[in-house]
Image (cartoon, rainbow, N blue to C red; front, side):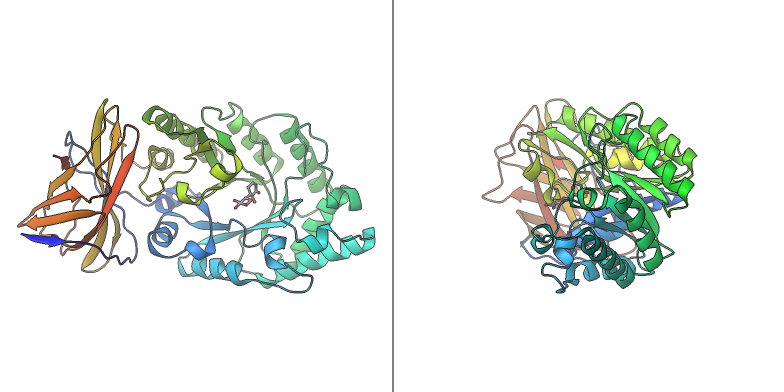
Length: 449
Ligand code: XIL
C-alpha cells in the first residue's frame, strides 16, 4: 500500500465521465461539444477571461469549444483606458489561444453604452468629434485583428424594452444612423468579418425583437453591411421563451445569420437537483432551437464554469448559470447541450435521497492523465467518505489532492482529507489525482463506502 498526496499537472483534454453508487455500465469518454456541434454544422462557443486560460480552465475551453468570445478584453474601456493609450494584452492573448486551438473568435463589442473609458464618457464632444472618435475606434480595433475575427458584435444593446432606441452617448449624439455607420466602418476595416447587432431580451418574439427585426430589414434594404443578429440569452430558469425558434427563423428568413451569443440560465441559489434538471431541459431547448434553424450558426455560453460567471455579481441571490460547476465538473446542463447537439451520453439520474460519486478524466496525454471524482449528495449527507474503484487497464495513481488515496494492485481507495469530509445535502466535494496509463484508460465505476 502506498499513500499519495498533492501536486497537479495538466495537458490536453479528453473527458471521461461520471459514475454512481448504483453502478451502471461505464460510459465511453464524452465526445467534445465542438465535435458534436461541427457534425451539425454549428459552432459552439464560450466567453473567456484571458488570465484564466491555463490548467483545467484552459483545457476545457480549448477542447470543448470551437469559438471564444472575450468576456471583457475587447471592450473600449479595456483597450483604450486613456485616449491614445492602447492595451491589447488580454485581447491578443485570447486571439492567440484561439488560433492555437483552431477556434473562431467573436469580437465583442465595438459600440456600447457600458464599459467605455471615462475620458470618452466624461468628454464633451461635438457630433463631428464623436463620429470621428467612433470611426477611429472601430477602424483601429477591427483593423488590428483583421482576418482573425470570424464575427464582430459591432453594436451592442441598442434598444429599450419597448423597441425604441436606447438613449446613449451614441444615439443622443449621432442619431440612429450611428448603427449603420458603425457597420459600414467595421466592414471597411475587415471585409471578411461577419457583422452583428447583439441585444438581450430579444430571444422571443416581442416589441424589442421586432424593433431589431425592422432595423435589420431596413439596413439590408439600404445595402448596409449586416450579416447577423446576436440573441444574448441571459435567461432565468424555466423561462426559455416559447417563441425562440420562431424568432430565430424570422431573422433567418430576412437573410441574416443568427447566433446565441451569451447564453446562461440562472437560478435562485442554492442549486438543487430539481433546479439542475430544469436547467438541463432549458439548455436543451435553447440549443435545439438553434440546431433546428440552418442559419443559426453559433451558440456561445457566457462563461462555461460557475466559477467564471457574471451572474452572482450582477443578480444577487442567483447563480449556477453555466454548464460546469465551480470545480469544472460537467453539470446536467452540459449534457443538455451535448444531447441537443446529438451526443448520446446520458446523465446518470441522481438516485433519490443518496450520495453519488462521478469520475471523470479531465486531461490525458501519452502516458499520463488527470482525473477527478465529485461526490454529491441530494436528500442525504455525509460527514466522512471513501471513494473506491478498480482500474480496468493497469492504470496507476501517482498523486492525489484533496483526498488521501491508496492503491493496492488495481484497487484504489480514496478517503476524505481532514477538511472536506462533510458533504451537505445539495452540496458536493471534488478531489483530483494524476495517474499513468497505457493502451487504454477506461472510466471505472466508483462506489462510496
Ligand atoms: C459582462 C461581463 O461578463 C462582466 O465581467 C462585466 O463586469 C460586465 O459585462 N451583456 C454583454 C456582455 O453584452 O458584455 C456583458 O458582460 C453581460 C451582458
